[in-house]
Image (tube, rainbow, N blue to C red; front, side, top):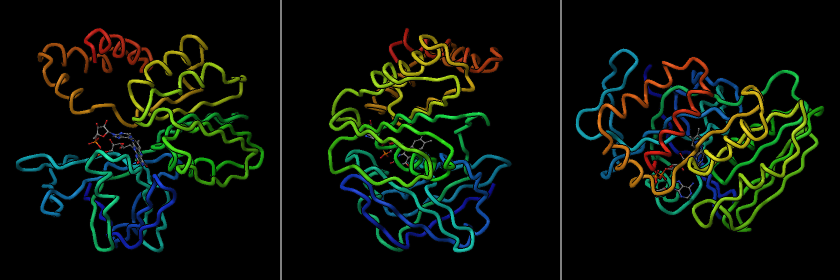
Length: 288
Ligand SMILES: Cc1cc2nc3c(=O)[nH]c(=O)nc-3n(C[C@H](O)[C@H](O)[C@H](O)COP(=O)(O)OP(=O)(O)OC[C@H]3O[C@@H](n4cnc5c(N)ncnc54)[C@H](O)[C@@H]3O)c2cc1C
């Protein structure tokens, strides 16, 4: 797949902690949006000199000579095929290269990305939607809520670092939004699993959870094992990781046999949720 590009046309502060970049490019007229509310792309950021590294295309793979570029997943908040535009909303969390790019972005800056992928998969018969997330899930939540019809009931619980990080959501659904201020988001322990423990789950509920990967291991375990939800009734997605460099160096220090065993779990165990149980348990045992 050839890359898609986006040149920053506009920037807009949505809150003290969130900036929207509107990207435009001729390749975006044919961007294959899935239409799924939480669809994301793997965004390639410029290197230190401000240049985007161009890949060599080798079948389905992009190959880079030398160091791999900085790449992070970001939600496609809006796609307008006619205008050749997409919006991406960036959390200004103050540490990483993606966040730094977004806070300094100005018209003319460029990004590159591949095809989108959506994860939200509510069954047809869903009557009630429960969304629990931190600031990184606000863009996906915004788009998911916009897509709900007026027959839907939705509860959205959003954990943010500060009061000034709240935004307005639009939805035709009967919507209850609850903000939890000063938890998670790298500023304090997350309350997400706590929130899930107290949430009412009816037979027609679908639960979508996005946030810090370590915290979500417990959140997923709660939904799957304590609450015995069927895998079609929830989606738990790790959006970022605390001290990711330290975590990666511990991952990279694992011997080859261990990493091969971990990766093989997903091909050897057909039920992918069961595979995830085994994978999580093994990672935990390895202190990861
Ligand atoms: C499917 C998907 C969709 C996503 N959509 C969005 C989106 O629309 N908007 C968005 O802002 N993010 C989104 N994210 C999360 C985003 O990819 C991560 O936050 C990413 O790590 C940011 O990259 P970085 O280069 O800024 O920081 P990194 O280089 O990854 O990390 C540097 C340091 O910053 C810390 N850090 C990273 N993210 C956060 C955070 N959110 N809060 C506090 N500390 C953090 C890390 O722990 C690390 O110590 C999404 C993630 C996924 C998987």
